[in-house]
Length: 161
Image 1 (cartoon, rainbow, N blue to C red):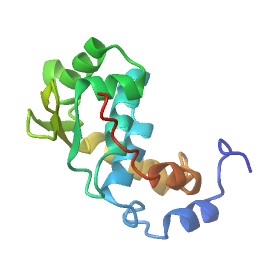
Image 2: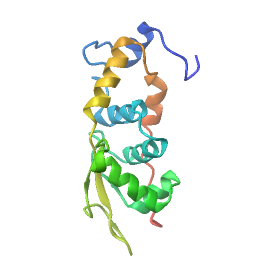
Image 3: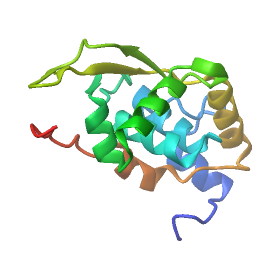
Image 4: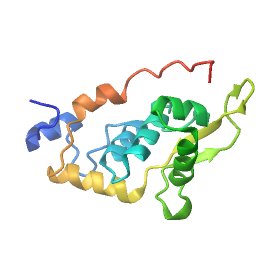
């Protein structure tokens, strides 16, 4: 079966744990956050930004300490684009809120100051939509291959940033 093919209802339930009331019950908050990002209707750049930060979350989708330069480098974005996306994902100017930020509370970066700390916030509308699509089987996500991507080791932070 290819990664893009649909699963049968039984395969879907087996891959996510059979809990029809909450098909996401067996996943950590970080894994749920990542699935919600994939499921959302956000732009590609915003999804890349959010998935990059989520890579550094703990299992509760908290405490990613990153600078704009780090985000820009990992996402192959301009620093100003990373800064603009950061404004959007914290819910400014009518955008959906995905993150809360503790400004300058992260690790110290020589010559640049302290990084920001990001905490994941799962938008209720996206979570409800994801749950509904998984319950229906209509948009059943193939969780098994995603688990490999979701549960990868966090990359080591580069001192050059």
